[in-house]
Length: 86
Image (cartoon, rainbow, N blue to C red; front, side, top):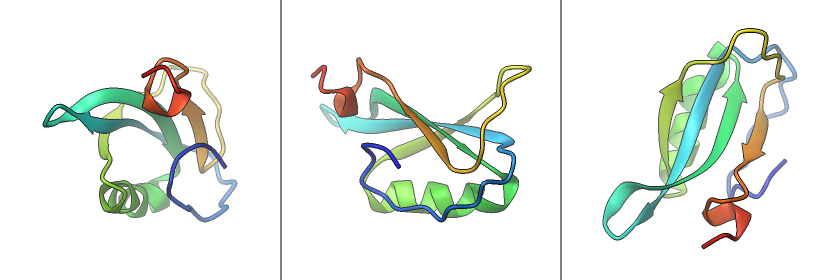
């Protein structure tokens, strides 16, 4: 699925929610912006819970108009912790 240390169900429904994923750094829960996870409404809460269990913080963000993603699709930012930039 991605470099994230969580497992999400394969849904393939249209994603309607974008979650920004942060890993902690220097005591800050929002220390590093690492990924965007695209999910459908049905899997939003389960995804946030899985991220919290993995010691990651989720922030709901607006999806850009015209963006089409399937649930659960993950984009790892190359400059974040999971992109090995740090």
